[in-house]
Image 1: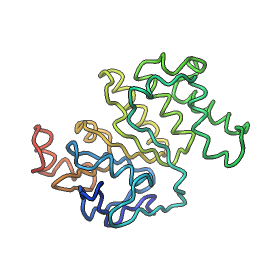
Image 2 (image 1 turned 180 degrees about the horizontal axis):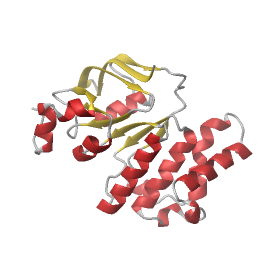
Image 3 (image 1 turned 90 degrees about the vertical axis):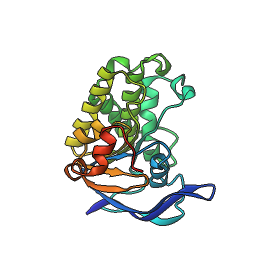
Length: 234
């Protein structure tokens, strides 16, 4: 059963439609890469899935026991966010806020979950460090740990390796892949067509031409060949 179904979505902003009649679904355990040129609607689609932006038409449906509040989200960072003056522990633990309900404190179970995700992402030595003092790769690991505290069912990642050097990029891709192998469903926006071809199980390519299917089907398509060669979907 699908965890996520996008049913005949038309998306846009300020009355301007940028995506029309888009339909696709995501099964538990999928690794979906969303690719396309700048301005094609990738971030608007992710905001719509998160419920931050209403679609012009169509709807987003949840299934397989997944609730709307059981989504981990790693957004693109702004300069201000990179300079946030909080400890690694405080930021990771804040991923449990949705679990607290009306409680003004974190439970032992929530603190244990934060500790578990610190360990999983190799962040224990940085637990008491200030977030603003970390490297870009370390900050992304912290935000990924925070997202895992929200849920380990479905992660939405918006350009998670943007601005990182090649070594750190490779490490983060491998980490995301390992989370997927452990059962976490991944939806990742990426400009990196090679990463989509290597890591994804499925690809959604949006723009003037829309493709949704398996990685193998995508790599056999003319659309992939044009993009891999630096072309467009015009």
